[in-house]
Image (cartoon, rainbow, N blue to C red):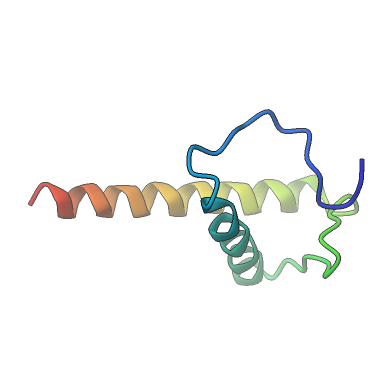
Length: 74
């Protein structure tokens, strides 16, 4: 499997959101002080670091959704 490819069976509902999710990944990694290689290959990244990035992304997405819903129902 080449660099940047994934075996994930998850399919984005909005394919255009892929770029935004990638950008969020880099922002969260930077906030956590985790360096993501420029070539995008993360095979040498510790599982703990990858999990931390995923966890923070999930928390941020939930927070964004909650704020959106709160604004929608006010």
